[in-house]
Image (cartoon, rainbow, N blue to C red; front, side, top):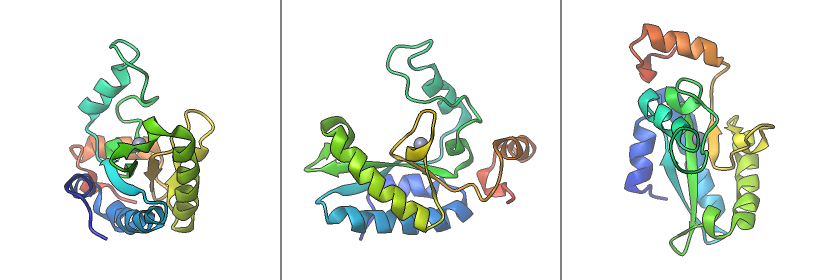
Length: 160
Ligand SMILES: [Zn+2]
């Protein structure tokens, strides 16, 4: 199954070792969702620390709903180790159009992810995020953060 331009761009920014695990997962997710008539895109991948600061401000010091609990450097997106999937049916974003269906589909994707050693944020106790998947290779955020400070924030230079 082919990837859209948006998916390709978001996969391209990932740490290469993470991409090697996440890309086959996205393919498997596309195949699983096709059975429901649902298209899958990677709608977010690597997110710069500056962009993360902007998102964190949303719903706090800027208008809008809170969309993340993560400050810059606290999201695995900031290390190129995480993706958010978007599920679309008849061109509509299912999360907005039919949250109950979205929940059900993310549950299925969560199981698929677990089988491939990928973490799904839908099971997180605080701020569960159905669309969010990541692979951290045992790295802690503190370790990742200190590596990024030393390597000029180059996600390709992360050591696992
Ligand atoms: Zn995410």
